[in-house]
Length: 390
Ligand SMILES: Cc1cc2nc3c(=O)[nH]c(=O)nc-3n(C[C@H](O)[C@H](O)[C@H](O)COP(=O)(O)OP(=O)(O)OC[C@H]3O[C@@H](n4cnc5c(N)ncnc54)[C@H](O)[C@@H]3O)c2cc1C
Image 1 (cartoon, rainbow, N blue to C red):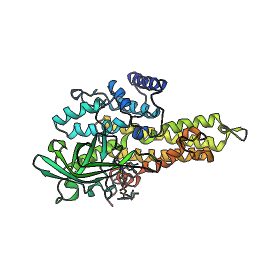
Image 2 (image 1 turned 120 degrees about the vertical axis):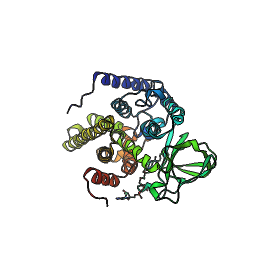
Image 3 (image 1 turned 120 degrees about the horizontal axis):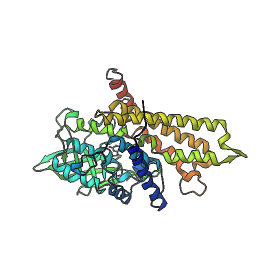
Image 4 (image 1 turned 45 degrees about the horizontal axis):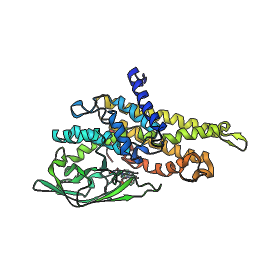
């Protein structure tokens, strides 16, 4: 197997690096952990858009670049390596645009894709509800037809960056009488519509990156329905593969990985360099082994996508493994830093900008969001190993 990138691909990687280095040189943002999901910067997103780097793989007729998924892998890998604030466009670029291309009408493609590509449409993911997470098909939010509109009532929770986003990708029940998987549809709606209330959820790290979204008699035109009415559950399954597939599941905390290695190289404890402590050396080496394995698993996902296959099992394996790695990384960083490692960003005594406690607390959610590790292992057992459904 040859995992070398072509000359053009390496050149593209360098272009992305040069762009990000220049942004850093100008002090436009600071690298941070979780920046793909918490680093909301429409200004950064617009600068990325100007380079044609949103919708890189989408068809040219809708304003995309028609480039390969490997190019997108390279682009996202560098964004993550630098901890760049890409949250405003990440979800639309990663999965929503692909769903519009796969299931949307021509009118929706012409209206929405260029807006995403220009860095003007920021789309949050409205799937989970208080009683519908792993079992998404149990969702209760309703969209009932009324003339040329749907009327939406219900509640979503954990909607990523909802209070920043101007659109929400919503899954709602359109046929309450049908069996639960068969009465669900997908919509894209504007978050500014009357009747929508967004209430940020403050998580254990103090971040407000998620929200509860309440829908009270919200009237949306029928043209907001994506794809076929009542087929939404089957459509969303396709989108989830992309949600799980990316390097953000491995490299969301790359700035911490980079910083802890530098810290070990530069720090002495009790007169002895940390880099000569066998235990610490082995801990870092173990992380590096896991990082490489995670990379290979994720590269494989992109190769499957590039071949036009659905990476359901590959993405489930990669996400389970990679989020384990990220939790291990955060634990190890806390162990190496010792007591001062608990100080959060903002404290002048906090080592490595307080990244470690943020990751330590934040990484608990990684093995829940986008499908819990238990659910993903069940997918591998069933679809990968052919074991019977539980
Ligand atoms: C940080 C974070 C960000 C998120 N972002 C979004 C977002 O942007 N949009 C969105 O819609 N949702 C989002 N979610 C929600 C996420 O998708 C759900 O939390 C997840 O699907 C689990 O659902 P639940 O929380 O209801 O837990 P449950 O489904 O109630 O699960 C509880 C526990 O039971 C286990 N379990 C459940 N069913 C089974 C089973 N059949 N077999 C074995 N074990 C099982 C689970 O693994 C878990 O450990 C986010 C969640 C987090 C934590």
